[in-house]
Image (cartoon, rainbow, N blue to C red; front, side, top):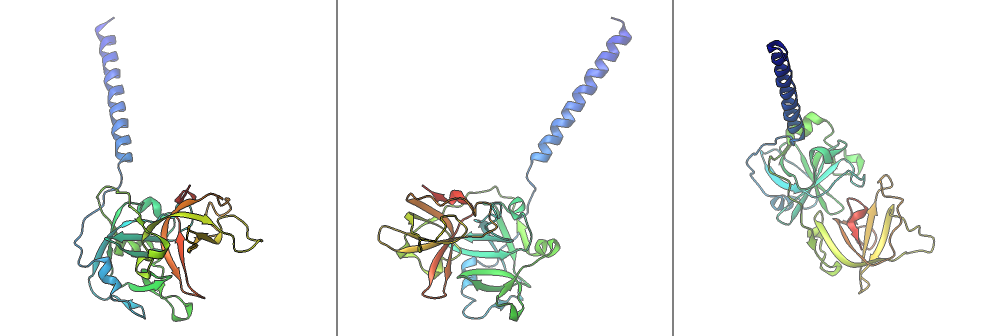
Length: 262
């Protein structure tokens, strides 16, 4: 082989190695999750609960709280909202955007700048968002735009930590638990009418061994809305809510069908 051919071969090998190295670097960069930031908190989620008694309240102070994400909109049962939890207290953020699980996955730590937002309650759950139109019947409205969301919601650079549900029985539930990710075992689906369709969509009654009841709630637009409800006893994991209409009832809102575990 001539010196020129050897030089040409060596040059080609060097170029190939450079291309492979660049490709590897690009792959590593693309696989790296987006970097967040850390900001100082000035209050706890639990302290926010003491601010709300009857009417919603508009925040005009630089209050910052933090919590870890416990909900996901990936299966469609949560619509444009993110629930976060910190030390046994929860807050639902009415974000107003789709595919929130991509930017705010379960287990991510989020900071919330509350200045300019309104706090209210729905189904017993403390919510933060924009001030709602009084005629809407709601206390809080969706934030709506990405720019506005970015002003109020910041993802931490900390790694994801899977939330641990609070293990409770139906008899232990109180309104203070609303918004928390809870785990209730020993439940079986009890149809309320003969005409009830045993699919997840809508409200369905579940009872424990003592006859105490809790209801599941699944949106008609959820990916698993038409899946059959198992006839076996199981464990519910989901966000706790309270429907005060009628005689009142507690609700479990799951992230997906896997939240009912046999």
